[in-house]
Length: 430
Ligand code: AMP
Ligand code: GLY
Image 1 (tube, rainbow, N blue to C red):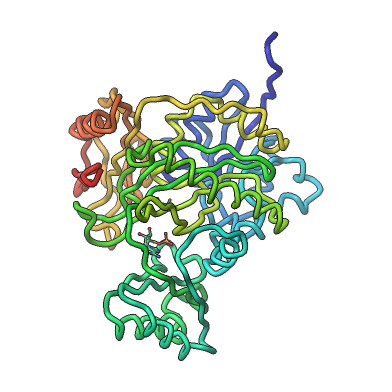
Image 2: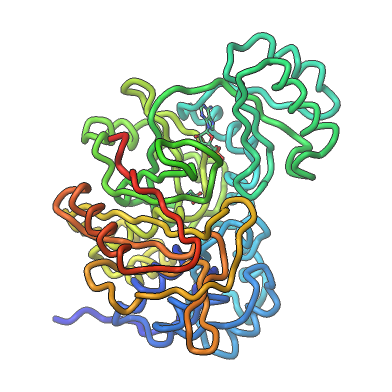
């Protein structure tokens, strides 16, 4: 018997490579009728209708949902979640029937406040770095705490700081002076009114992605992203320069530990603390010896990790989203492609600092061995031009990650824009 399917109109919020990947995967579903992306980019434009709406303009989003008869909203970035978009839908009679993929505001604090996340982990015995938090009222105690630690010193602005709020410093005096500038001079604005100081963890990082309906969970493939701009993991932090899935050093034994010590207590902790959660949990992990520890929670998928995780998902994503919204996730089988996937991100020269935009991107139609997920790219006068720092993610499959990376680099040979830059060393550390 053919299973019953729900056909619906769907809206994806966001404009990056992550959202193009969501749209690409959703567009393959027979449960998707019309697909919209707000605001989207030149990649989403080819497979969906872009709506020129800001992701935090809840009023405009509501109007678009009603006008286009949308019954599922997938939230890409953290900002709307931390600002309470899910609660906004639930509180409004005319849109409360719409399914929203992403946690409610109280649970989004896992990403919105580092201190909230640390307290959550400590309450539920989830392994993470030891920490203490400070405000301008007890800055002196902060200095003393720093004196009691060994370098390097890890200082984190409590709130959202566009990925810039974490400082890792070797010098005690510099750490004290940065603590002062965060707390007393609002270095990261309101986000650093509170600062978490934590133990430095030495190890290799990876990310674990979990789907939950608030009751049950499913674990998606792991991924590793390359955050620094320079080869050999040097230079400034970026949103992410590339990613690999699966992570070769995440053995079954290690992943079993991650599930038992971290994923299960996280989902159970959400229930115990009455934190309503239908969405993705992105757990940033560090492997210290054989022990996984949590570096951070994000309440959304990663970018560019999505560009390697979703291509490996064989199960219909809309079916999964519907099961999440109906609290029947436990009934869904998650099928994963055994192949490796890698993505290499092409960025505008100068990124993550100042860079130029509006450069024509050539060669897009010549790439046939990789999937191009557009990010900071838009259509203008019939041409695709750059419009952001991270421009495009070039994803490939392979029997091994080495094979997949090679394919991405071969595809990149065909692509060009003025001052294009990318890392040529992905996988160097594996
Ligand atoms: P976060 O924004 O919390 O992900 O931190 C940004 C980056 O800082 C992480 O990806 C790690 O590379 C590094 N980091 C954060 N916390 C620690 C820690 N306790 N020990 C070592 N590195 C850390
Ligand atoms: N690639 C890291 C992130 O999405 O936060």
